[in-house]
Image 1 (tube, rainbow, N blue to C red):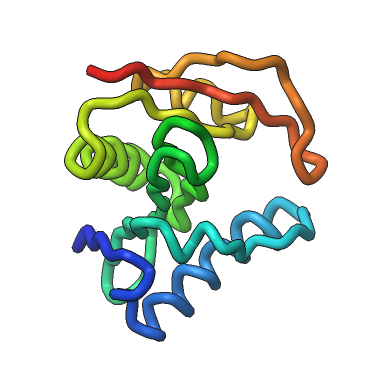
Image 2: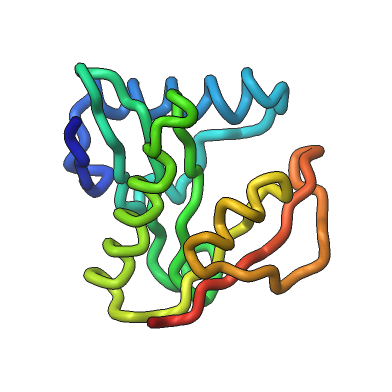
Length: 146
C-alpha cells in the first residue's frame, strides 16, 4: 500500500486516467448521477490517493482557501474497496495535508448526507440545512482548526 500526493501537473497520464476512472465509477455510475465530474478545480488541487497492487483504492482532493469556499476544502472522497479502513486513512492524510500546506485552518466540505457520520468522526460538524446537489442530498460541514 502506498499513499501518494501530487499536484495536477505532477500526475502521470496513467495516474490521471485511473483517478478519473475511479471518480466516474463511484460518483457517476455507482450513484447513478450524471453530472460534470471533471471540473477546472482539479487543476488547482492536491490529489491524494492510495494504491494497493497498482490499483487506486482511495482518493480525495484538497483545495486551497478561495477555490470552492473561503476555507480550505477536501472533496471527491472515495474508496473503491469498502470496509478496509481506506476511508479513514485517506481522510487523515487529507486533513494532514491541509495543515501542512495551509496551516492549522478551518476546513469546509460539501458532504453527501448519508456520509455525515463518517465525517463527524474526523471532527466535522454540520453548518447548513440539507440541500440537493445533482439530485443527491448534501450538507455543508466544517472542521475547526486544531
